[in-house]
Length: 384
Ligand SMILES: *Cc1c(COP(=O)(O)O)cnc(C)c1O
Image (cartoon, rainbow, N blue to C red; front, side, top):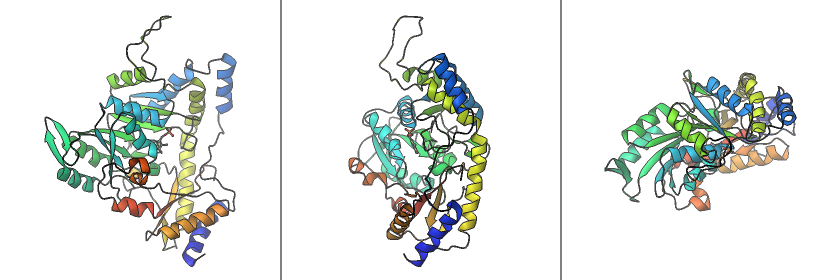
């Protein structure tokens, strides 16, 4: 182990203690069992029950979104949001080169093609300045549509994602989307509890999504939600995710092919109990970040990623960033910490390096490549 690796590993262990330590473990210390028992005692475990409405109302209250629609996972929330944004077969959708694969997968569910764009170093989000120059370069406007000159396909939408809970420059990105007349969907899967000023991430555009998978800041087992301030979109989202059933006490009438993406009552019950504890989790997360920040303060070779200025991150997942991108250094740190039972993970691979996206259009991804070689996620459970 070289000296740089040794000092970084020591700075992590200073905070986590010796292994085994998980990357991110859920924490159930509130009303989870009470609410789950209520579902079982009343037999409302599935598609009927009061917890789904309650969970949606709590989400609206916390995020300030007018409407929310709870669904089975974040991926299905993305799928439906893109469908509601009007994405069609043969469209291109701009997707950050570094995000969880689900963001790009959801694009392909509609027969559309992900078009990967570069990131910026400071906040790990899409770089708006590069994006504007790139779009000016490759796009022409035809009949109110923005066409990619290189592929001839319409560029129909942009997905913005707030990496690890750190807000992207969504306001600038939204301006670009307006200039180029493309739709925008906010993937706030990782950023429940993150704000720009007083506004919650996921509420800056017509459509935003959240995830409550087991590794997120709160969990419903599996789950997600669509956020919108537009009543028509909220009604359409509810219909599309509930087999488009026409309300009737007993008749099976459906008015279009739709999806069975509704969140079951059991999962929503868990979600209600988890949401009640969100403020406490956010405090615990920030404390953990402060400890890591302190532990790395005298280390030159790596720093802890901090929230962008003007924003409040949920600090869902803490990350160190090597001062100089270095893949072999990164791999060595991963190997040593995991061998010690301290679960660490690399940043994602850039998505066009996955075989099934190898043909996808992309802009030069130099910053995404650098970030992929310099970022390591470190243990971040709220109970640490
Ligand atoms: C977790 C996640 C999703 C998908 O959420 P699931 O609930 O696991 O389907 C989408 N995008 C990002 C950025 C995520 O981290």
